[in-house]
Length: 216
Image 1 (cartoon, rainbow, N blue to C red):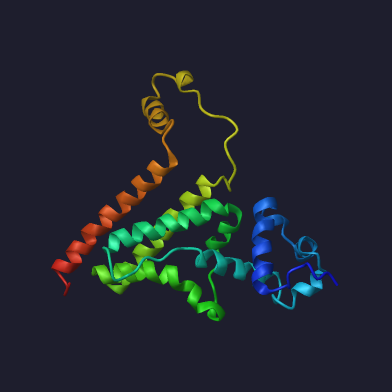
Image 2: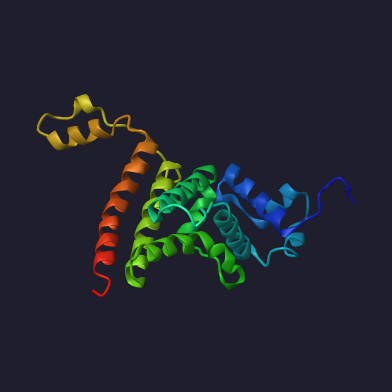
């Protein structure tokens, strides 16, 4: 028995799995390999996670727990949403491979508290004056933007091996040339913030309309 080894816990299994995925990619993760990194047999892991699917769900819970939720009693709904989307992005860029799990997985009834950052965004839309239907649609539109942007930014989908030579674009391809020049050298922070502002500007119009016409 190795007395220097920290005790095996669910939290340690999940944190080690995150580290493994960060080093090797999500596809490489297996219970056997994870056990090897922890210095135990794979069967020992089943005392802390039910199976690999439970492990992946636990990773999703851990990622959501990392998202910072601002105090709802201070600041505007827009400032809160900007802060939470920024925190989602920070988590995604820190752990891009694991972040892909958010595309198809949500915490279950076993981890209702892990929904907190998702509910917080929805709640800000409701508090701003949007109805249930509009708030839900706004949440899904925003989630699609943030997750998609972060996955592309993090290089999860791979990077292009060949960039377009703007000078080699024929003169009759005016819009293509203009598009390439406009995108060349644009910082990711600027792109993310600009896209978020476009979304929130449009939503702010909906909010003002909802407040002015509460019965419609």
